[in-house]
Image (cartoon, rainbow, N blue to C red; front, side):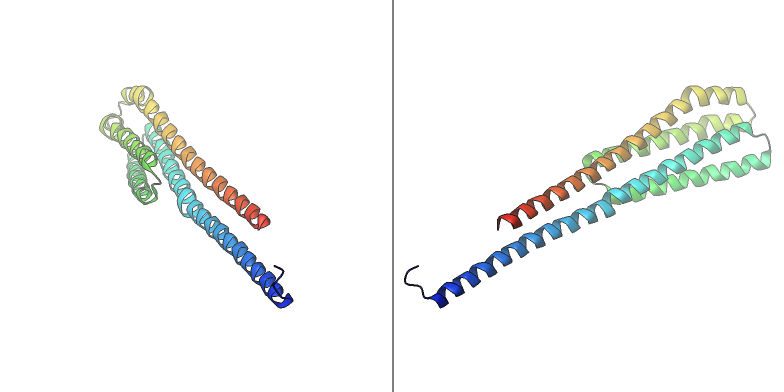
Length: 194
């Protein structure tokens, strides 16, 4: 250091300062990139998943309401209209669950989707194969027994499945947010140290 002239020392200080600024810039770029990636993951993954599952759950609830309305109805024309709505409900649920396949985050998510689809299928098949024929014949007492003893527990199981799946996606979004905030804090500390 003794042999360095003032000009060399100034150039060394400027070089060191520029290097430190570049390092801070790279840390900031890295943190910004990971933050943007996390926001994209939450927006395109978790929020889209929650929206799709919420929509499927709502259509399932609409189908359940339509089934009970069918049970309480005795007008043939209205019953035919309700059956049509039930077909639309089933088609819409299938479409939403199929769309969810493109949003699957991991193996656990895939298993939960398969469980949701299986529960919905079992529920709708039971209604269509056993309850609906009895309602069409106005055998409401037998249909009511089926609805109370078999269909209602399946409906509760299906709703629990949807709720657990939505909670799983909420947890994934929370974890992603936590990781992003942690990276941002690390970036801030790195910048302060430089």
